[in-house]
Length: 115
Image (cartoon, rainbow, N blue to C red; front, side, top):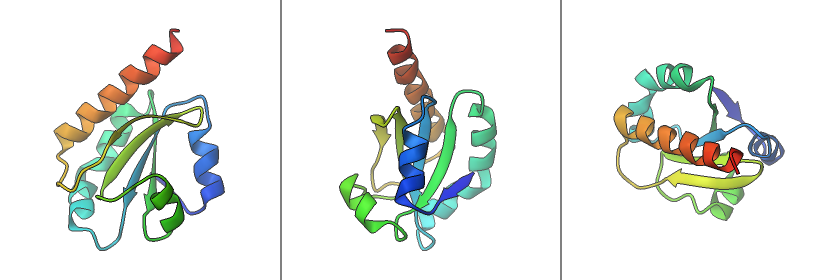
């Protein structure tokens, strides 16, 4: 998974016509480390439907403030610069919950394509 290091790179990814899901994390977050063992497999399973990228919240506090990222890890789905859905709370996320969110993001993105 690519780690985004600049706001310009973030805007480029989320502005694409392809569904992009951004995971906001930090190095010190235990719940962020909890998803590490399985997130690569999740990324591979969804590679044909979306792009997963990662941002360290501590590296881009202004962007995270703009997006109202409070709990981490947080997941936000974007397409063509527009936020579609988000999975944001202070609780640890399971693989099943993440996959359910990604399925929802794909569904919302597909609905927009068919209009």
